[in-house]
Length: 179
Image (cartoon, rainbow, N blue to C red; front, side, top):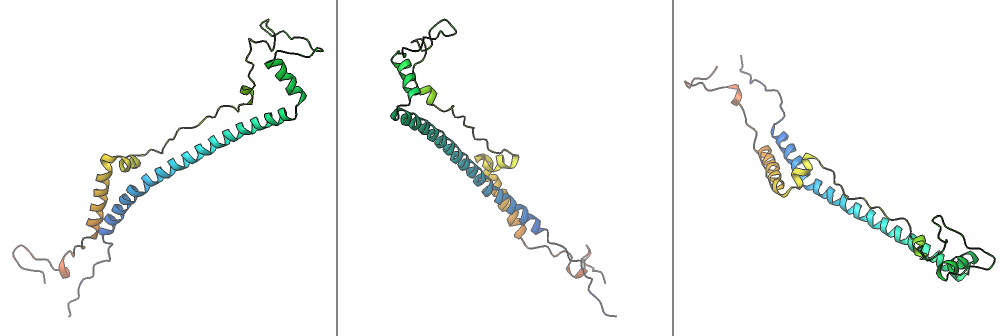
């Protein structure tokens, strides 16, 4: 009878698990801070667009007011004469306000500009997404350790696989092998 070599079942090299884990950690070290920077840049862009829109609305309101002044809109001219010059047309009477004062008297704010201003802009604060992994890879104290740990896992995964028992034979303590 010829001696047949026992066949070992094909096994996945456990080194691949270390390589995958190490590459995952190194990818997290690179991608999570970049993603946070991208979120911050998008937040700044959205904030700048909101400020621009608010200012454009303000300019539009002032342009409409100026156009009404240039056209000498009768209601606007009367309102300005009443509030700024304290003059009212002869066919109108002075109106009493709720506190007994005169509507349009100097006790009220006579400026037209508060009515032209758009409502105040409410801007949101930046809130990055927080997780345990993101805090580990963005904190300067632990980021280096994460890089070292990921590189060590990749190095361990690249080491040659162990061959186990050679040809199904094992050396006993006494030096005699199996036959």
